[in-house]
Length: 236
Image (cartoon, rainbow, N blue to C red; front, side):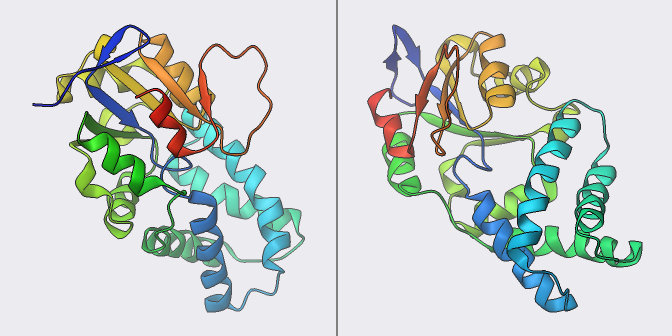
């Protein structure tokens, strides 16, 4: 039985983490994945130039994906196709498909976490039940956690694909409550996305901590924001 701690007057028992961009350093691991792919297929583009174009395109596709405006297949193809087109680099659809498959195969084997990830998880594990709620593809998330040696910290892993909708949809959080035995009053969400993680949690009555590792300026902030994982210790 876990201990019960108070967060701003509320007794917290369950801590829900996002995975990508929160614990698992998605950008670093993704960059290394593309380096491996470019070598494999002898793609003659400067990797830094590619990534500079790719990252905002990928971010936009994920936003569309969260809002059910593109499918998983359209995301995987479109983010690559649009990037190569923007760079005026001709690639066949067959090669894009191969890159897309390899990307998801290679990505989980890179295992970089954000600084202090193990330290904060060790600290929290003795006090709370820890869980993951992720919009990431189900076939890769478990592999990422195993590769980075953090899987054992978490009792339940809730993927948007297992629910059928994506954060910030309230059904994701309600499903998480159902399978963990948690509720809005004894739970807190920790994640990087204001829309998906923070607003999604606040909208169902949970507390939330925003991981603002890039220290971006945020207007009209009505939630706790931290700039490093170790900052969680101030509140939990």
